[in-house]
Image 1 (tube, helix red, strand yellow):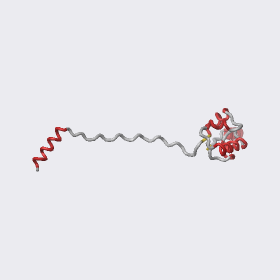
Image 2 (cartoon, helix red, strand yellow):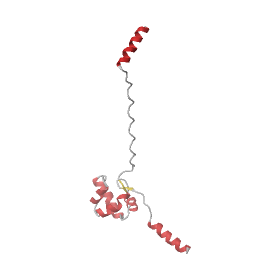
Image 3 (spheres, rainbow, N blue to C red):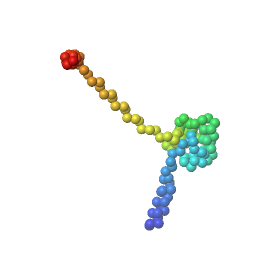
Image 4 (tube, rainbow, N blue to C red):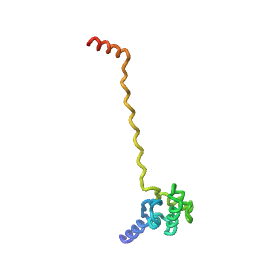
Length: 120
């Protein structure tokens, strides 16, 4: 029974391999084919060739322009694709509102001036 459990567990684990996302604008063909399910070395080479001739991919959907890759393939692999190596920074907190300027009523100002004049 233990042996059966171990075999089933090993099989389950082998089908649930978690691939890390790949940057299709910088990765080589081997890295792309290893990271993207359904993309073999030939399609990965086509991705690299397209990138080298047309420039970087602006959106994941641009992959449909690569020969041999259609919308269904893009839909399946889009969550495993990066377009840059940087992770979006969290939004900055809004700046605090400036402190209100002190308000000096004009009547008090005149009174203060009279007191200062008398003190001189």
